[in-house]
Amino acid sequence: MAEVRKQEKDFTKEVDELLQETSALVKSVQLSDALERLLALEKQTRNARLANDLPSTTRLAKAALELCYESRDYTQLNSTISLLSKKHGQLKVVVQAIVEQAISWLPAIRQEQGVEKWLELVETLRSIFLETPRARVTLALSHYHETLSKAPNALAATIKETLQTASDLLSDLQVETYSSMERREKTEFILEQMRLLIAVARLKDAEAPAKQGKNALGSGEPEWVKAKVGGRKVNESFLKEKANEDLKLKYYDLMIQQALHQSAYLEVAKHYEKVWDTPSIKEDESKSRAALEHIVYYVVLAPHDNEQSDMLHHLFANPALEKLELHYNLVKSFVTRELMRWPGIESLYGPFLRTTPVFSVSKQWEDLHTRVVEHNVRVVAQYYTRITLSRLTVLLDLTPQQTEETLARLVVSHTIWARVDRPAGIVNFRNKRSAEDVMNDWSSDMQKLLGLVEKTWIGMNAAQAAQSRIKA
Image 1 (cartoon, rainbow, N blue to C red):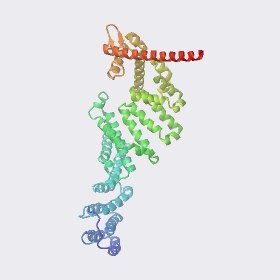
Image 2 (image 1 turned 90 degrees about the vertical axis):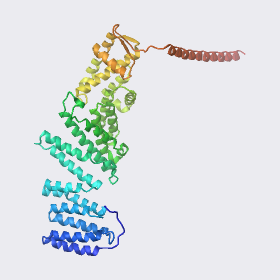
Image 3 (image 1 turned 60 degrees about the horizontal axis):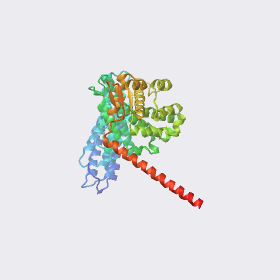
Image 4 (image 1 turned 180 degrees about the vertical axis):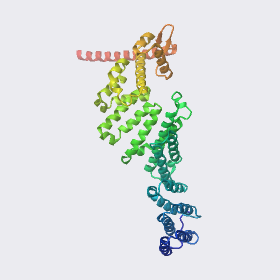
């Protein structure tokens, strides 16, 4: 496409006369003659050396398409669009004008002429590489393939194929690099890419053998990874704006689905916290309550580390949590350095939690049991130097094998330090100290002691001096 140059000649008068003549030719069913005359004059107005009349070229190109559309000759319409867009020295502004004009006819063509003619025009427009218009047409085509997958009588193979096609069409668009597209529309495209990728991933995961899981051949793991990468393309600071709250909620909903697939509970809790901080959610009491409840659920489900502990303590200090008595007590149980016996937790919180969408899933209920056990092990490790394995098994409400597995997992993750003496049946929670460590601690203690002695001596001298002055 050529760049816009200085206009050398004005063809406005000739164009006005020709448009009147071609209208009469079309009425007398002479479309080809009318197009021939329009294209001849269009060549003169487009010629950079002689004229370079941009307004007239645009009028003639749009008029040629208008004649084809009014004549309902869609084959000629498609060929005319291709011809005009590929002409030597054609101006980008002209190509953009005819593409936008054709896009405006798409809904009417689909309704009046059917899907076949609509698809022909869509493919013609997609063959012209203009970033934003091509992306919009591709989005419409993607939605068409998605509707095919939702047909009532669609076969499983057809559903997978059409949904995969819809996802591939959008994924081929690198809209984050399009400078001509507005940020909001760009974000909408990325979110749509993520949504379709997750839909394809769920479909593939449902077909993959259950035993092999993520490693199964043909599973949806590649799509899950692409969805995660797509999430990184979204600017979260842009979503904080008041006008973009709908995009923010949609984005975090997709990110929650992606994080749940990986059982990344702490990430899910963070996403729900962002949702909870949204003004429209806080204004709605029921939505605000639901978001806060989910933050509690997923932060206690997350494995213990510094970040999880920090978020848990901040949540416990939040005044809004006190309004949810049961959830407040649940968080308090994890914050307090005391044992939580699983039978008691199950009887106290189980009847309510098992009715929630989060803990109605057996895996997540088992994960909660695991977090309770891990909390108890950390508490025991804090208060005990050594403990028999049989006693620890009773405190944790586990079998000996489960107790050893839990200890091994926490030791490997560096959450605690422990060694198990199996013949003696004793668990040691204190690492053997070297002579250097013992001497360093003794030296530190002696310095503290001497400091206290010196402070006491100074205080006694001051008291004696004061008393002697009083007697004098």
